[in-house]
Image (cartoon, rainbow, N blue to C red; front, side):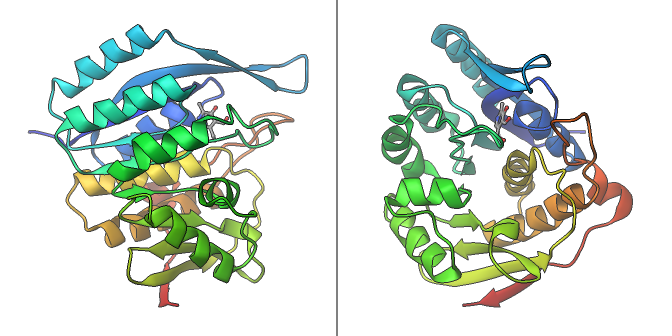
Length: 277
Ligand code: PXL
């Protein structure tokens, strides 16, 4: 038996909800074989309100991991938390070497609950080195505003404007995660393929345990692309997958509640409505 091979270039969330932990669990749930190239290790301080520490790995160690994984011939890859411009450039070169066009760029800028942008120069570097390679990029509202050089989108019209600007950098499909932040009873994401805009909707769920949702969404898209789904089908399935994961999110401690990465396959997944807008 052979499996489709998926690679994530991302950070380790020691608490297990986001980063490579989310990616590997999600790859597994989609029946793909997951590999990792670790960029940073994120720890949490149990004695100081779970404050995050971010420790970058030496870039030569990252390069060796990338060489290892790429030598196996991968079917799709994603990027997540990248420490600085040098690492972003290195990830861009890895994509060029990978031999696959199934590339998902999750432009991680901050961790949920943390206010500081990782490194302001990263935005320019992502625009230059990563977005031109993206089959799909998955910014949240804040990241979309930063990339598009506009205020954080608040409405679907703002999201359309941001998606068009980000598409102009070379990303073939832009998915802006409005999630529960956009008013109304539905969690709405915007899908833009360069010609058409679609709203992808599921009913909002009342869970505030959603740590790792963004990584899980991007990883699900990556696995779906490896498995041969079209870009649009890959994103729609990923939305259903992560909606189930959020619905079954759970409290780990006073500070964090991860999504349940395996919920869709155990408990089923909601319908996603797709509406041309
Ligand atoms: O959710 C963003 C994120 C991505 N990657 C890693 C993280 C986090 C947030 O905690 O730790 C490694």
